[in-house]
Image (cartoon, rainbow, N blue to C red; front, side):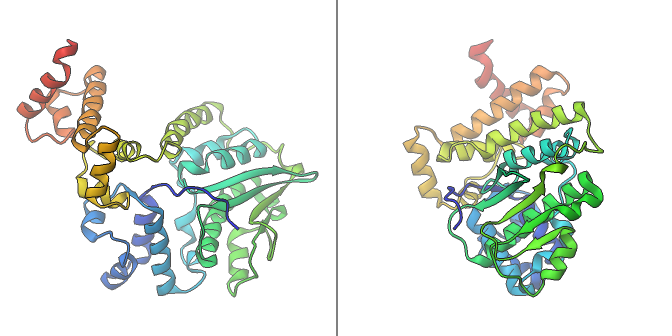
Length: 331
């Protein structure tokens, strides 16, 4: 059974990526969005910042209905590590394979906040054991495991080269009809009906030096990861979750309906929960805009007009009035 983990909001990146890759016709896009509560308008104007775990699972269900089991293998490139994501950079720039595995386990929540990889050390091997949030139907859990394995397998391939053949990918389920295709995509050994979902790496490979090891790049990626993980691991109260969404948005502004949908709440419930925390949605937005304005003003790289435009103010006068309100008592 999966480990009990409270589901958290997810960034919308993979939701968009899956929609783009599999939604090649208007009808397919509509089918993939069906029942998610997310519309084309939110996708097209990039206002979709975060989604709920349930919305991601609904999307998986829709794609499987269109393409059948094993749909993740139709486009394995979707699951490859994003080259510019700090977790991917930190993994491949680590000094050794062992250090890379520790980063995979520690920071999986940076881009998959409802999943865990536990590093378990044995006498001859180490394992990355996978678990997910809440109870899931086996087919959806299997899709998540396959996606994690494809990402990890790609990184391990870069680190190990031909030695990837010694890595074993273990699944708790019987071998599906597409098992041979999955093995070809992963490049290692396979074990079905295993006691746990795990990637098993022989200990003799842990000391191998990464061909892409770079101490400076690695340290910078780790610093970025700590910042990203602070969002992923933050408390899940309404105030904290709204602050996360505003911080991730382009301008520091999102409409109340957008945020309510991202959190899987009605606007009324969201307002009530914020009131219970003695804050308001308008106040949280104002605080985010003030913090961004202060950082940009102190940096001195942009004019006040440019800063106001970045923060979504209609004109320079509106931004000036906001600055007087924000900073008058501090100057």
